[in-house]
Length: 64
Image (tube, rainbow, N blue to C red):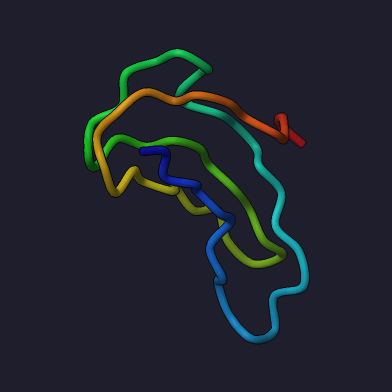
């Protein structure tokens, strides 16, 4: 069963986030805790980690 990965809600005042780098590509194996992508807000840069193991099936948004 596929597990969707959504852009996390960072805070009340954050209006937008930008994916700056994908660390995994379509078809890559993913382990729990692996960094999937890095994103930035107007105040910080953060990493999003996988919460489950599996294979990255698709990315719907690219860098930037």
